[in-house]
Length: 218
View 1 (spheres, rainbow, N blue to C red):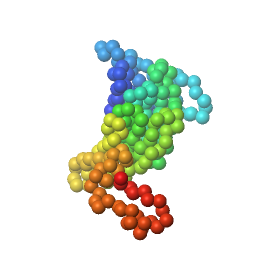
View 2: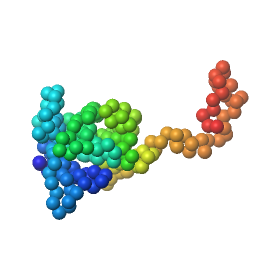
View 3: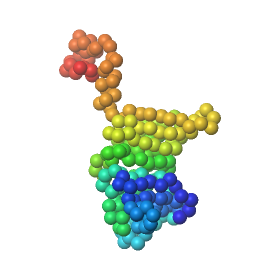
View 4: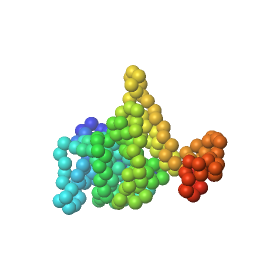
């Protein structure tokens, strides 16, 4: 399997995913902790033993970078060195199914589902990309956040309200931590809470003549 990558448990604790430099991810049934059982392997192209369309060939030389387990829907996100994150449906662990592929534009460093499964964060060298996973078969890229340093690990808070990224610091052999608020409505409320004075109707008409009065803060 090559050198192991950090393992990841499913939300119910019954499945363990381990990844190696050979590009595969092994799924283990650990419901009986004293006797873990191998269930299946996800490769960069196809799971071992699974019959799929020829449009999904095995890609030699591709390694696994990171794995994240969605708390809903039995989904695994597997980041690979071919600038791709593959989403797998492992609801049936003996027959995992490739759902979709996300092209990241550069090699991903880490991948993380939000605690409610609605958001997927992918850490890249100098940015973090967010995908909406409300429709897992058709994820929508939501935004790209610029990071000050190379990203090593990412995490999304409950409710997808905050994103954390750990990277290499430019100030010696230390780590840096960046935090972003991803709940735009909440951020707008905070901005309006400190914005003063309020934009009046006369100010609006002076700056935006002929435009209906719609102040950004009520």
